[in-house]
Image 1 (cartoon, helix red, strand yellow):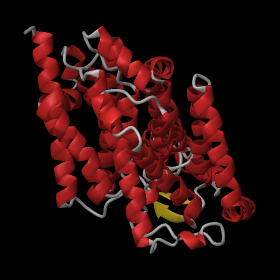
Image 2 (cartoon, helix red, strand yellow):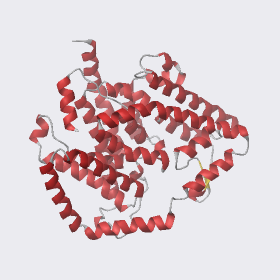
Image 3 (spheres, one colour):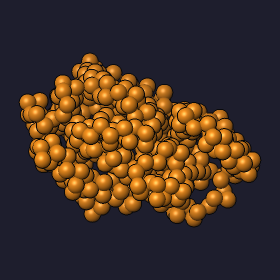
Length: 420
């Protein structure tokens, strides 16, 4: 057995199981912004470390990852490591200089460290076999479904309220997780994808139904709480994915189209109600004062050239008009957030980081378009409209998108391509 075979077997064994368990535990017991470091969060971190190994985070934080072969494939990931390390220490030094509270600094540093997960996870994910990688993406989908189901249970399974009133978010804001729209798209597309493998043939009738119900639970939860961007982008991604899948299967397309017509007619009143609530919310709150948020950040860091150049550091607060001018440590877009914390220099650094990952994302869009479509709504919302860029679930999705599974078995690659 070659060294590559041994490495693939080990990576696809207990280490991959630890990561899969961490992702599923996140959906079953954690939250996008947990109140503290509880047992479930510690177990999630343990699963991540078991997959990554203890050396990776230390090499990244120290900058030695630039000289390590374990960093990732090629110059792109080494450049990403350099940017993350530089901004981590820049923000910490600036925050300590300004005298911000340790608690506020930790609330910024920990989410920033989550953004290093694509650099840390991608090398291991890329060594998974195609089938193992698909199962890992499925785990992310079911984690998002678990979050949606937990919200439905907390809301009393109030399906009858759909389209008549907007339901509350709940105290843990579970639907703010980037995994929920991801799951809504991925599970729905999996329901209509071509089955492959013995297990899929054995359950060829039940599995598509299970995938479809899981995706529907996520979409209905987003509709019930009027998550406008998440719902709209998810539906668009599903339509694009269906067009790609069904163009190759005309008979199935005809049957599915008839089923969708029946569903729309049967659920016409609730669907019309959801559309009305979306329109009413848009008329009432518009863009939720996102422009005012950017102006508030510009006003704060524009007080002197140094603050504009390097920001106010991790732990800085801003009087945010999007939340009633409370002084908070967050904004609802990555652009204004990093301008506040690490200034124009930080924005340039994050642009370099995004650029290093963009090539991998573009490749994924060509090779694995269904995964790209599932991830696109969550990534767009996290970057431009919501604080989810600070959540670990956002970085998990980004890690999957920038990973490219490789296998020495051509047949397995072909089956994987047919599968999704």
